[in-house]
Image 1: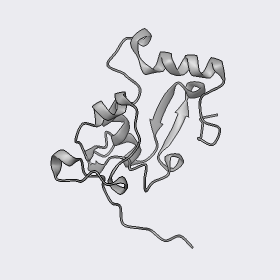
Image 2: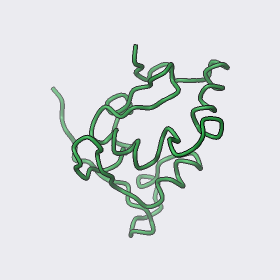
Image 3: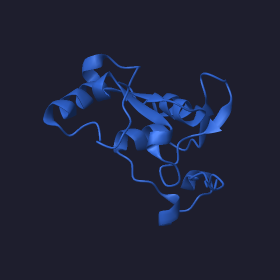
Image 4: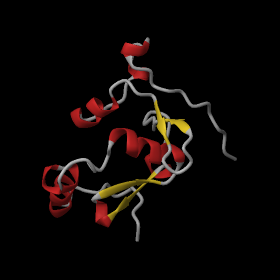
Length: 122
């Protein structure tokens, strides 16, 4: 039996949120800067406004999958797709050599990426 909990959006301090631990999520500088104070984005498939992924309440594997051996993140749900778009998780606006995709390739070579438990396209 699955119990669906209400989605609680992490509200940035700049929008009236607070800096208690239950309202924070660990993020790298790149993602934190891209998130800025956005709490929602547009799903490019449905054009609906949806909340962005909340790592404190949602499971990564339910919203994302790794493509190209772990180089590219693809959203598999409206929340996943909207988060990929809002945070530009694949650095599509930048040349390959200056992007997170090149960094992920390095991590793959070192065996550090992608995380073992994350779903991958086969």
